[in-house]
Image (cartoon, rainbow, N blue to C red; front, side, top):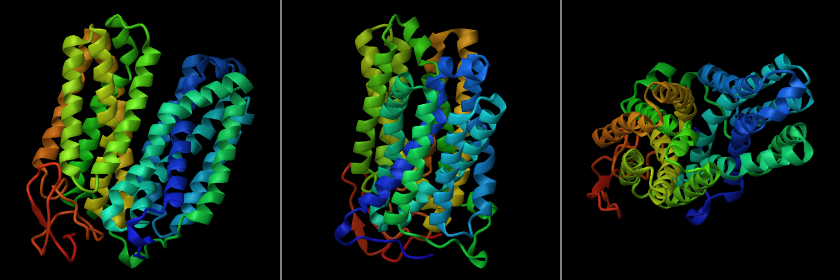
Length: 428
C-alpha cells in the first residue's frame, strides 16, 4: 500500500478531509431529501405520497445490495477516480430526478444513487485513514463523518426550504451541481492512492472473519437497530408524552449530535474504548429515562439532547474501530460490509419499532430499543482484545489495532489502565 499523505507536525490535511466530508454531506442529503418533499413531488409525478417515500427505500435497498459486490469489483482501480466516479453518478441521478416527469424513471435514478452511495460509503473512512498518520486516524474519520451530522442538522432543512422557495426540482438540481463541484475540489486537494494489485488483495471472506471485524459489525447492527426503533417513531412517542413541538425536539437532537461529533474528535485517538462505552451507556440510560419519565417535558428534552450527544459520536468510534481492525489497505472492503450491516440495522429497527408501536403503543418503544443497545454495550465490553482495545496502536497501519507488549507506555486520560503499545505495529 502506498504510504498516506502525511502532513508534518501532526496537522490534519483540512482541505482534503473537508472535501470528503462534503461528499458524505451530499450522499446523506441525496438519500433523505425526498422524505421532506413528499407532498410537492407526489402531484407532478402522479403518484401518492407513500410512493414518493419509496424513493428513499429504493436508495437504501440499492445501497444495501451493491456495497459489497461493487466495492470488491473496484478494489483494483485507483481510488480517486472511483471516488470521483461515484460523485458523478450522484450528479447524474440528481439531475435525472430534477428533470423527470416519470415515476419509473425517478425510481431508476434513485437506484443509481443508491449504488453510488454504497460505493462512496465503503471508501470514505478508509480514504481518510490513508491521508493521515495512524495516530491521527480517528480524528480524520470524525471530520469526514461530520458531514453526516451537518446534513441531518442543517442540510435536509435547508434543502426543504430551497424546495419551498424555488421548487423541488431546483433542490435536486442544486445537489447535482454540488456533486460536480466536489469532483473538482477532490481532484485538486485529495491525494490519489493506487488500487490493490491482484496478488495483494485479501479475499473478502478473510477480511470478514478477522477477529476484530465481527464484533464491530455486531455493534453496528445492534446500535442502529436500537437507535432506529426510537428515532423513526419519535414523533408519535412525543405526541403520547404530550409534547407537541416535535420540530423543536428534532432540532435539539440534531444540534446535540454536532456536540457529540466535536467531543468524539477530541477523544477518539486517545481513549476510543472508554468513549464508546460511555456513549453506549449514555444511550441506554436515555432510553430508560424516556421509558420512565418522558411525560415530564424537561426530562424528555434533556434526554433527547443527551441521546444526540451520545449518538453523534458513536458511529465515528465504531467506524474507527473497524478501520483499525481491518487495516487501511482493506478498509474499503470492511466498510462495505459495514454499509450493508448499517442499512440492515436501519431497516430492522424501523420494522421492529413499527411492530412494537402497532402492538404495544408508543410507550413500549424505549423498552424495545433498550435490549439491542445493551447488547452492543456488552459486546464492546467483552471484545477488548481484538476489536475495541483500550488504546489504539499508533503503528496500527497494517491491520488490527491490538496493542502488543512493547516499549512505549500510553496512559488513557479517561482513566483506563495503562496499556503498552507496540513500536513495530499490531498483529494482523
